[in-house]
Image 1 (cartoon, rainbow, N blue to C red):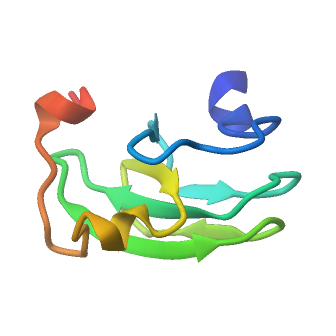
Image 2: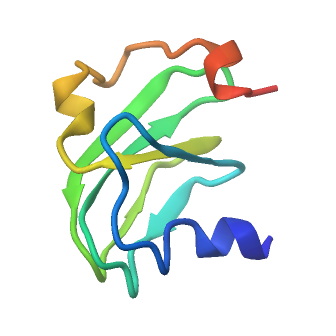
Length: 96
């Protein structure tokens, strides 16, 4: 539970191509974070339900019925073409 709550807190940045998968997580907060992130909400099957781009510090984002959240460096979702309706492979995400 604590590792899910901590997420990227305390980190100074997230390198391009890196990300953090948090599950279960229908919502996230960026309290005390030092940099903006893209937040990708996923179903259990890896379907992108919603993308919250460039979420700055001190924000909360959620998606009803989302199972997991993929946190990416700001701009990474757009750069990679990640959008609602896309499907990310479960093997890549290690979703059940």
